[in-house]
Length: 117
Image (cartoon, rainbow, N blue to C red; front, top):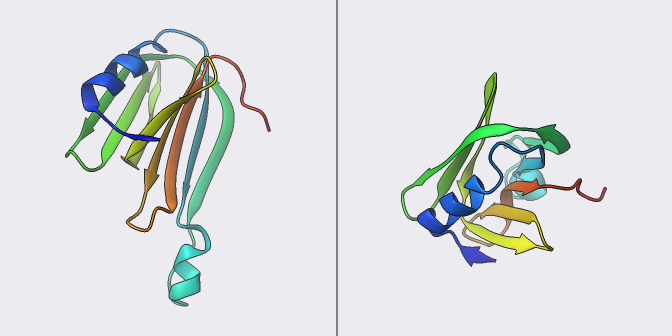
């Protein structure tokens, strides 16, 4: 994976605008939290192959972490804490956010075809 470059990512995101696409969105602190602090809460969210169409994509950030928002007809999808990206296959954009130890904290993936499950 490569560090996010805001303008390059904005251009890539716009390639998926106004198309039916599949989204994978996952957040987790997983077992990381409870292994080291028995008072910490495990939290996470997971959605895979949600078929959506968004009219606008926007990336903002501070140079270290980024937030991507996808504006749909009646709402938004967003992921915050993104740090890295890659293209997988011909049409899957993968964005991820890793903590200081390199552990996955958030993942946003967009594809014109369904993800394997």
